[in-house]
Length: 500
Ligand SMILES: [Cu+2]
Image (cartoon, rainbow, N blue to C red; front, side, top):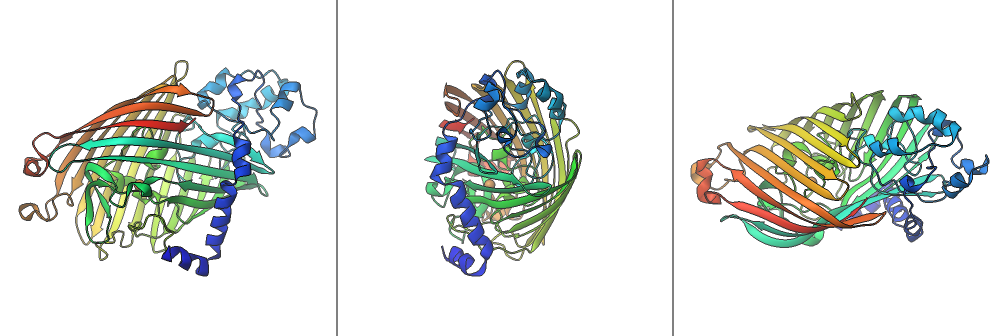
């Protein structure tokens, strides 16, 4: 809380964020959002593809059919399907059919009035921070409208029993997840956006949960967390965006967050369709997407059609062990990212960052991080979805070693009810065997494979509730077997509540 007090004294921005947060969490809004309806159940879905030319609430300006009236923008709306399901929507109004051509990649506001925060395209393209995912990504959430603001809520909660095998394993019951609120409104020829994302992770305790081969951050400010995943901070994102359209497919944008996510790496794992269903963190987290909670980020970007170029200044230091506070911002590190969505199903990025003193326990070490990733998300059949992410990250420590991490993850969701997921990772590690004299300073390649599934047995228009499980196996160099056992097996069973 000390840092937050600092923040209140020094920075007006923090006050704005606190305001934003209280706005997003206001009970009135929650009540509005509590009466969603599913577009897919309407013969005439409330689709308005011509938002640039339209006043925000066009029901006041033009006669509406019965169906349109029922779905006037004041009514909160929920979009429960992935974009492919729009193909099944019927458009009885000729006027609406005429503008539907934009659907192939242009801006449209069928998601309760929401479009891209950063540019004139479908909101389904946006991942965590300013990252992109394929346009075919599912767009889950509860939508509402408050004045000129379009709002959206999203979240999930896992209750997990975790068993990690072998001498370095452990057991723990804990909860993880996130809740996210977003709001946007037109401003000039552009879009103003605010968002807040919170995590229940701090309640699991400072030392996180047992996760073999995971490393990174600290629980006490003195020792590394090894074979444990650190909890995320209560405030994962408090950010604002403004984008200004240059033409029908191009824009410039600004993003600022405290905390926020710089333009570095693939979208954070809980925002990838291929990763969100797996309740455990990737062991490649600190090679790829660990900067998703950074205290102090400013990003500027240019979007031209299917390309995005952006650069960030941000605080290089990882969050400390105090997970409830807002830490003091700094802009001592830099990154740049190039993203490309050549087709609706595919999103790719390459990025580079220079992180100033990222690790609290090794303050003299800076890090260059290079990442490249591709996400492919393919709806298929009646209501099924398959998504895969491949990613590579390289940490170049100054002074120090160069360490690579590789990740391949995939998830298939059948009929929004049956989910199968898998994640394979390979990491060049030096921290796991810190303090083991014979291995000190050696780079060891470790591998993990996790496979699991979820059955969602209860579903409403807004949420689904399911049970799941996963099993993890490892491939380790022989020199690590005295530490981990010859063939450890780990697993989790969990219950999940998810907004859809
Ligand atoms: Cu994280």
